[in-house]
Length: 225
Image (cartoon, rainbow, N blue to C red):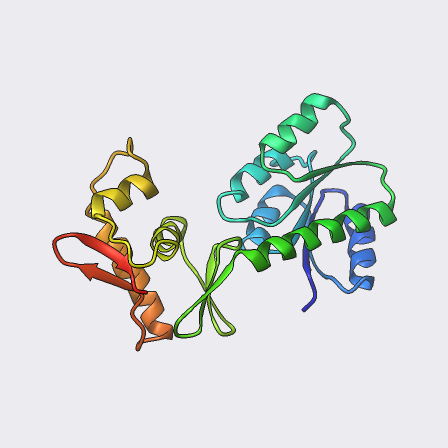
């Protein structure tokens, strides 16, 4: 399957040049001309993002910070800025690489391939198979039932991650709340039950015969071995 690359830059000629180059290399290319478009396209989960910093409505730093809550793919900043402070800010925002304009297309392509190889190695190690054709990809933070992908909101996946990585261990509702929401969060641990209900409902829509999260009455929840 072709790798999906999102190119976000307000300079149309650069986007056209890069889109043509990477399309010729066999990539599926998505284009964005501003920060808002980049945010929308990032929800489609590209495999890698080339992100310009100096966009007018929302700069690349802001875009990177906002999408890092749900996007785990490599983000490569493209920019004319060369100050060390900008590089540090880019890495702090969640960027993985920093490429200064003007750049060599050959070097850019090599860096893109290197990041994708690194992600592939990490993803292979982070995939765990369970009964009922379920695979949990902890790197992409999603579930697969054969070829069917199930994306869960951040806290729902965090619950699945906690329980599935400790199969058979019983977690009290309060413990799950502390681990997922944080011990200093304002709220009630009863929200855990509602999140687990949603997780079960989504899984049941794909595999109604399988039970993964079991209720241990009076104690809490566990992932079925």
